[in-house]
Length: 507
Image 1 (cartoon, rainbow, N blue to C red):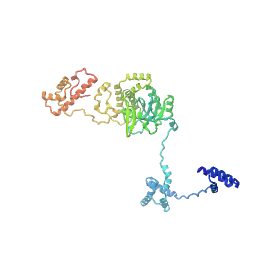
Image 2: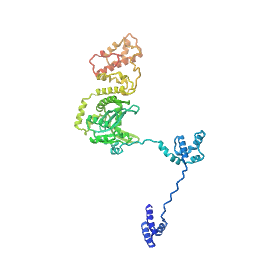
Image 3: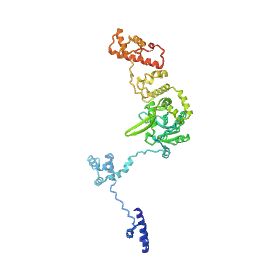
Image 4: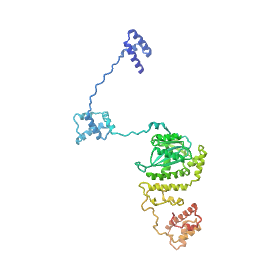
């Protein structure tokens, strides 16, 4: 129809200006093109008249003057800035109430105009007021062309990559407030093996990011092939892009506000970094230095001695999601089993592994954690006066560390000023017969505490009540625990009765 209308407009002007013979030719041509009957074509062309340009309507008189608009603004504020449809219904009540209490006095001409104003007119008159009072900053998009030039990679985009493709993210050690300056951890996780690297940063800055990544790249025993980052401006900038381009590292990014696109690094942020460092606030170069020592020990301990799960498949059956995992393995073993890792890199990994002591690494981690716990802002801990007693003492304490509860100093809760109770409240009923009990245990270590208790009742002159059996059972259990610890940790050549006694304090 639109095409026909354009054709009628074009032909009708010629038809009215033509002579009789010319009209016949124009009519024949028009009927052939449009398919109209000849009589219908005549009627269509005759009805057409060149429509003159419609006159402009006279300007509308301004019905709602400045007084009505001012009154509307006052009532809108008094109504807590509600929308026009609600404000339309609230104005009669508000006007009456405000006039009754002397807050408003409308002129006789303003009142009917205000009450007759429609909801749409109210919204239209208040539009510039709302925009002026709502000066919210739009979310800035820094380097939008640069951001668009970096490819987006989702969680499903990882199709069994070779070792060397890392996800990278920040962990902020800010405590309960992000205000002020605080230390960050830059974390990298390899998709194929789960190899995790961490480094302390005093502040977030793009040049420091490239310098930190370069230091990590030199420590790695296999090359970095790709980096997948979030949309933080510290990662998306010309400095990082140029660094990756010069070293032939593929740079990709996740989708904004889609943290599951970086599920690998998010999992390591909690399972490795938060587990090691905790949630306290770290500030200054001193804490960053201690955090660096913690990351140095943790990278070797986690990557060489901590097996982790890796997702094998995931499928949905109705409301159920069934996940299957590979057998847990350390990142070190995954790299050795991967055919895409060079033989030279595997030999270097084996040499590093042969020289590592997991207990020494764990001791270094605990020492760094203890130092961080002492330095945390506002943290009070009894460990402030404790110094390192060496690896030997640390190894000896492994069998009884569980008794103290939380073993990580960075995760311990504040203790009371008195501390744990270490004194006895009652006299030990077996103090006088302890040599006899030790003699029986050395002669027959597998004898039960109950059997010893019955023998004491028969052979000892001291009266023992049945309720004291539990005390003897605890002391015998401590004796056996110490013997087991000596057998496991060494020192078993000394006589057992000279090494530990019943009821002695276990360190």
